[in-house]
Amino acid sequence: MTAFAIRNLKLYFRDRGAVFFSLLAVIITFGLYVLFLGDVYTQNLAEQGIPAAEAKEIMDHWVMAGIIAEAGVTISHGVLEVIIADKARRITKDFYVSPVKHSALTGGYLICAFVVSVLMISLTFVLTQAYILLSGGAATSPAKLPAVFGVIFLVSFASAGMMSFFVSIFKSQQAYASASSIVGTLIGFVMGIYLPVGMYPSVVQWIIRCFPISHGAVLLRQIMMDDVMEEAFAGMPAPVLDKVCESFGVTYYFGDFKVTPLTSICILLVTGIVFMALACMNLGKKQKI
Image (cartoon, rainbow, N blue to C red; front, side):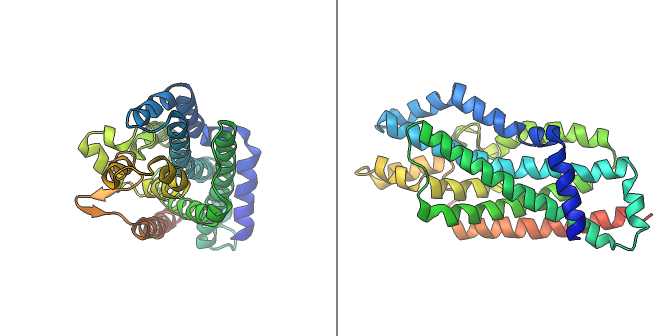
C-alpha cells in the first residue's frame, strides 16, 4: 500500500500541468479577490464603522481561510485523477494480476490524496500568510498554528474522502473531464468564498452550510480572524458582531441552532469516513476483472 501511494505521489508531482490545474481554482479565487472583490468587501465593513485598515485585514483573513479550505477539494480532485488515467491506460489490469490486494491499491490512492492535500494546503497557508504580511496585516499567531494545521488535516481527510467517491463513479476520462469542469466552476460558490454567505439567496445559503468542506472554511475563519475581529469590534454591541459573523460565514446557523466548532469537526470526520468507505466499496466492485 505504501509503495503504491509513493508511486502515485511521484506521478502527481512529475506532471507539472496536473499540479497547476489542481491549484487553478485557488489561483482564480485569489486573483478575483485581489483585483476586484477585496475593495468591495472592505468598503462594506467600513460602512459599518470599521476603520479601513482593519476592515482590509479582516477581509484578507476571511478570503484566505476560504482559499485554504477550497484547496483541499481541488488538490484532492487533481491527485485522484490518476485513478481514471490508470483505468484508461489499462494499467490497473497489471496491478490486478499481481499478488497485491485490491484493498491495498485503493488505500494507496487514498493515502496519496491525503498526503498531497496536507502538503499543498500547508504550502497554500504559508503563501496566504505571506500575502497578509505584505498587505500590512498581522499573520496568524504561533499559538494558533496547531489549531490551523489540525483543521488542515481534517479538511484534507474529508476532501480526500469526497473526491475519491466522486472519482470512483466515472469510467471514462471524457465524462470525468466534463464533470471536473463543473466542479471547478461551482466549488467557490458552494463553499461561500466568492461572496459572503449572507449575500446569497436563502436556498443557496442552506446548500453552503450543508456542504461538508465549507465547515473547514468556518473553522479556519474562526481561528484566523479571531484577533483582528476582537480588536475591530471592540466597544460595539455584541449583536453587531454576531450579525457580521453570520453574514460572512464565520459562524453557521441551522435555524436557531448555532453550529459549534465541535459540530463542524464532527461533520468533517464523518464525511471523510463515510465517503472513503463508499469509495472503497465502489472501487472494489470495479476492480473485479
